[in-house]
Image (cartoon, rainbow, N blue to C red):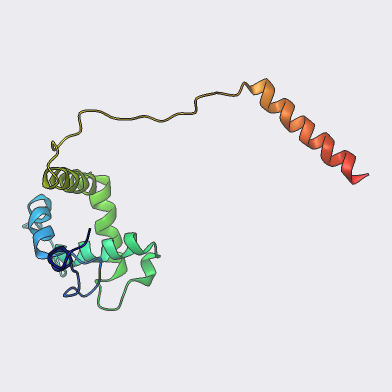
Length: 144
């Protein structure tokens, strides 16, 4: 249940966008991010801004080209997203946040059991193909 205290605690009103990282979230994620290489071109955009743009695209379900004007260039954001996805960094961030949330609510960091769901009755191929044949026959009969 929401109380005035929890509403203040989880409020994102001070952020530019609802998908932007709070300072507490950034403090958890920042140690996982790689440092810019000592040699080569320096990064023009801070990693936090890149992550904010990635979260904006992913949460909004929008195309990369629809990033806001105050975001880093979409080619930069997508390149960094692809790099972090391929190196497993985004998966590591997700794992860290899930563990932190589990500990926050008083559970063990890693789940000890899992529930797998599968259909209880499997249909044999012969029965499925017979049902398809009957459906085709009924459509053909009704078309006459």
